[in-house]
Image (cartoon, rainbow, N blue to C red):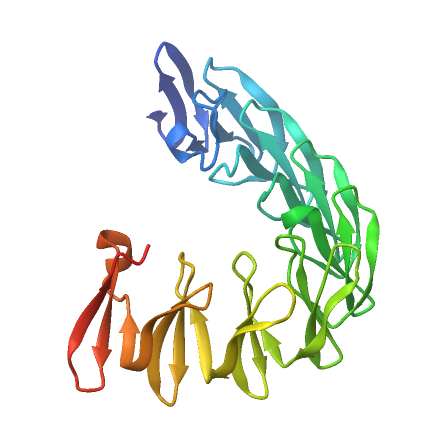
Length: 305
């Protein structure tokens, strides 16, 4: 970057853009999270007369002076731009993929992003095509090809084509995983398949997001594990169960003691310890976690990955 007084210009390889801009945001392949493109066409966003265009790596102006604001980062090959109070998207080649028309655009997940317009939510793909029109009060992302939507205070599901396949009828839902979703009807939780059929009737006071085919559920005030048929593989005897992040392991609490179990219900450490912790990031660094017994002694659980 070069400057003259309060104005800024660009020197990039053999390209020289004379100082004329009030502000410059440089983009680099190192600051393009989740993008597979190694040589982005866009080099920078520049501000002049309160408007932002983009400058390409060959010094050309892309999308001349039409945006009021631009984001400082690319996410998944897209940068958010704003004009007239509305948000749109520009890709790393300088193409206006989504014209500024939404009040809010979320980040892409599974090649789709949630969008908000006039207080209603919908879904778009990475080409800017509207998959689900913004007509819903709330929306979740699109894992397992099904998207949870809220209408008139109830949740249902829309498929990847935008068709409402499960009518809004639930008080609360989790996203589908391996063809199954947890749903709350009245005060109890059960499980449905993609046709909307209740395959495990509502009977649980609470559920946790599940790992593969194992579900953590609460019944009669205690936590346990069930399989896809609803059969308990670990009876509800625990006071609390929490997921150990980024693993298929669960921390168990029973009568003020702590233990460790895998997602198949196999007890790795009995609930006889004072606590289990990973405050030193040992799990990430050397594949173990630290435990402390009720007798105030420390130990380690190794090879848990």
